[in-house]
Length: 286
Ligand SMILES: C[S@@+](CC[C@H](N)C(=O)[O-])C[C@H]1O[C@@H](n2cnc3c(N)ncnc32)[C@H](O)[C@@H]1O
Image 1 (cartoon, rainbow, N blue to C red):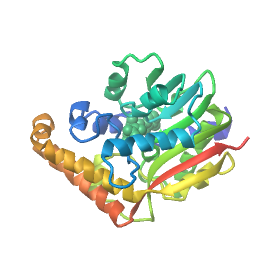
Image 2 (image 1 turned 90 degrees about the vertical axis):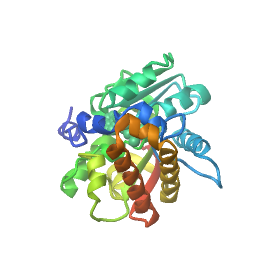
Image 3 (image 1 turned 90 degrees about the horizontal axis):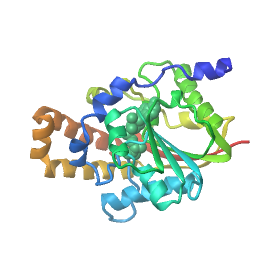
């Protein structure tokens, strides 16, 4: 491994414990907030449609952008509860979908369905060494965790470069990468509750993923759907309010109220344009 490669694999992101503290609140809780497929990222809306339809549109957007349909092997980095993995093998004719998560409860949830075309690994992407290259890579809502707070700008960008260098190494020639991430629209101070909700994680600035991919990937398309995240967060808050008593019974009143406040603060950030929601597709250069 070259010096650049080993530097790129430094542990610059959120630790498994930090991830577990949030995602292992448990499926029972997230089922009260999210759609039935447990997509925990921004949906993609058209007109006045419901959350589940918009979440499916989001999955299909990334499958299309990554050129994943009908391929043999697709990697989902940060697979959550597996909505993308299921869409890939059940609707997009993918032979084998591999998902990575740091959350044991998410991995258990996916495994219990016993789908032979789906493999889930409790693994940091930095540790994943596939025997064969993937035909396409998709990563939705995980890039937000790849850098810890407090890194100086050069090290932060270097950490993102490490991610693109890794994707380059494990992607087939001509393969595509479709990425979705929240980004800061510009430098600003983050609300302490958001820092508490996602300990150890920092967001990219809008330009950083593009700069970090330079030399490895060519940019194909990029859109900022911050208004779609505002709508998604509103649906989640409405769901939480509908199920308030059940949520309190599961995690207690203070955790439920804090979760609601985090949804509201995040929605406000998108509403006023402090936060952006990037959907970016890249093709491997050569
Ligand atoms: C907000 S969830 C998004 C899940 C899913 N993509 C979705 O849209 O529902 C973030 C996911 O990224 C995973 N994750 C965060 N950092 C990771 C890392 N370094 N390696 C692998 N997975 C990671 C978490 O475990 C979690 O599954």
